Image (cartoon, rainbow over all chains, first blue to last red):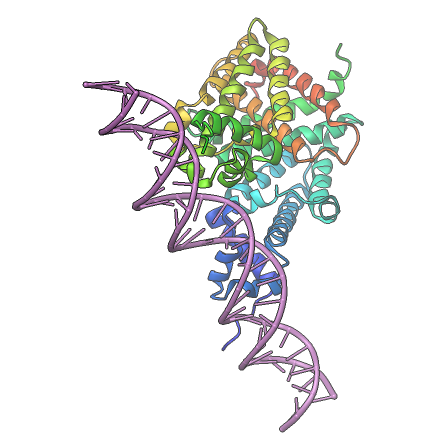
Length: 193
Length: 193
DNA sequence: GGATTTGCCTAATGGTGTTAGGTAGATGCA
DNA sequence: TGCATCTACCTAACACCATTAGGCAAATCC
């Protein structure tokens, strides 16, 4: 009986593709086994269990996302950097909806710390360098960007904007404009009552 | 054998409470049956299936959320309204994390249209009246608010802000300040290149 | 080329979702 | 009040997913 050539790597990769096809929540050990034309039990030599598989897919997604973010902000500053970063984020989510969901799979603290999540967060901070914020404003701004981007993308993919005009594609640059203006104005808004 | 007094209403209510306790993704027909000390099959006279149950929980959550939003914006305008609306949103999510997740359960178009989702969106639009935006800016602004609030709350509940100072509780008012300033400035930002 | 490793298998168990059809307690009507 | 009907909950059965234990044969090592 020929061997299928299973590998943790290969399983995780196929799992990520499966997620993009059927949605991360429908990624199942059984379906994966089916795709490799292999019995379910065979997977358990390569991943600990279903949770382990999903965690590994999440780590893959976080890594890819951080890579795109790094590419986007490299050699750019200010509004250019903001736009590139944001577009990279949104682009990843639309091209890989399953992986994007996977990236939100809850990780235990140590795994999260060792993931590419912090790297992605550093990119977000780097992008803000052009706006010359001081702490704690910079941290607040990082969180604002994270909230807007994740919020928009997740509402968009779930169809939240699809039943009204104008197209969500027009709102996106409007939001980026607004954020750019906002970040420029932050130093002054600190002295608000 | 005494009857348990099952009702669609009662099941959905208990399902919502279960969601808050164990997370919406762990709401299961079996667990619900266990709570009512009843066999699983008995539930199928009151809900069509698992998807139906989850949909009904989602509708309940959307309704409660819209109620809170309506209370919040009633009799308020401008920044007050913004803050109250936002706090209502975040408050609901922290008090009822399971229901909050349920409110994001994907609904088919007709169900979504008949849900309290549109009502909630109208509240969001109402709160913007104080800022005197014209279309399409108002729509963009509605979406921005939705993105920020949902993004922040969902990152916060998944623990995204919990591993760095300052506390997420400090970022929230900072963001509301920033949004208020942003919305006031919108009319001018339209003439940007 | 024999020993060992290891990749995939069979078998078994327990949990969830769902349907079909039965029974007993509640309800309606004379 | 007693019978008929209705319906709320049940048993039984099946399919699918996750997981573990233990077996056999292909690959690998000397």
